[in-house]
Length: 330
Image 1 (tube, helix red, strand yellow):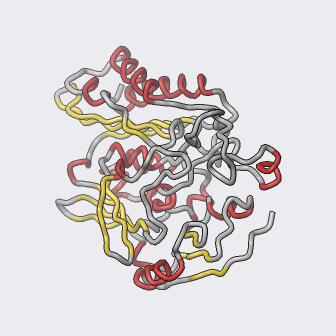
Image 2: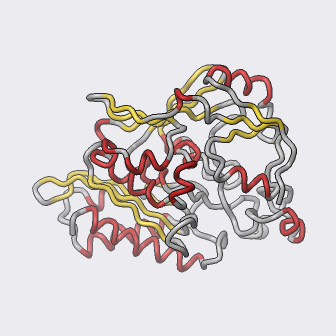
């Protein structure tokens, strides 16, 4: 499958990139942003996107790197590779759930190219959407691209394509924030506010906006973190279910905890009630299983992949229980 024709833009600074956005990004159909290209390029080959312009950010050095701010946490540039995050000493020591999640993304070669910003902004996926143009044309297209029918939930008006990024679940557990910049200025929001919960319009990011940095607070540091991922193969594959857990213990009991899931909803989600179910407890099988049940209730997997929704929901429960026990040191 060949790439469609497009004009490549290669800014050398953030200001130049914003100038390009102001000039060309009247809609996401006209311009697409590429960082590592591990998701966008295959999608362009499938003719999911046929933009007039592709804005290549790789040469903007100010958007790369991991910077520890003494007393105020860590700042990560959006172009920082997943490999750099996986092997960062400061992140492994203080925000281990993020390095665990980054280490599971795709394969080593793809992690060398893929970026944290790209993983946060990853397009939602579906068995009916992520196919060639010929395949999609044969089934009449779908709500997410060129059609008006959701094959996952026929008769409905909502797109159920699933978000399948690994690192956002870990970042949600860390109460991460992101910086978004446009020609109009910049804003900083909590990551959980970045996602809409809609499969076909899943990010609160305008065509002329860039995600530029990720912030991890000092108050989220030094939790014990675990990430567990279900996939068919041990490498390359997107998650069919993913669970992130962070726990801080005091005197043998949980002082604070958070749980988040990915790949089973149109957005990564914090599991409501999990913190209350864990705080003040000595974690055992019963406590961990109760949190697993909460996670399974939060999960809404539908037929967006080759595995059944029932199996994926059950695996969310199982993987959450295992992750909670591991994070508690059991």
